[in-house]
Image 1 (cartoon, helix red, strand yellow):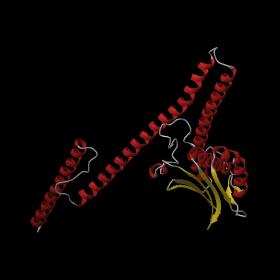
Image 2: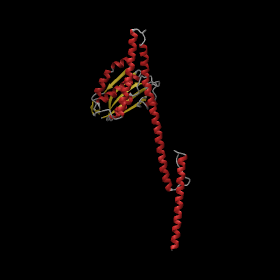
Image 3: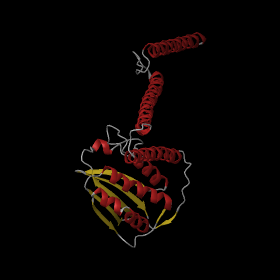
Image 4: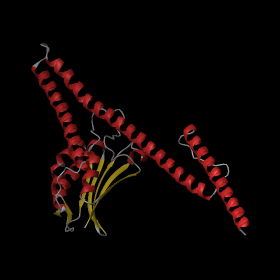
Length: 295
């Protein structure tokens, strides 16, 4: 009896030892694969249940590491592109200012020419100031440092007054403008100054990038009040539309300095922080930005 028990114990120990040896061998094989082929899934020649569970965990960690590395590379590329865009957008008006200042140092200019050049310098300086101010505001918004209140806001009152203020701009630009604002709409919870900035940026965006037609609509749709700003945008693609809310994005591929590429990014940040939703769409050549204000 004792001999039988001893034999069984010996056999069990031998089987356990073999199992441990096989598992150790598999683990060593995994370790070698990790060293020699980092980032690739680890495989075993003859896996068992315990080893399979270990492999699943290792491969899951590898996938997470690969995803993190890919996201890190994407963010690095985005940051480099943004730095390049900032540098270019700052350099464009600065180069122009320096060039005209050099011309103004000459003695051969007439008084009329001096006045004309000074006006150009003033315009470039304002563009530079607008870029820096917009970038500062967006940074504060994204950092949660931009104070926004939540109170009842009459969108019709704000938008109707703003559209009237921009009337001369529409006329000078030669736009065929349609303004249809529904009255007696319910108030929405938002920041009045934030709403004004959103509407101002959207009108300016349409003026800067539109060509002939523009429409400003305000109406109720179910449990939201919709403000829609449309303009014809020949040359804008559906791929462009996917990026219009990205900071520094502009359809001006040459980046001539006509746009900071921050206006719509500020709109998205403001609308989101006030608890509402903004979308963009392209229908033929008509580009539309809609803000859906929850009632």
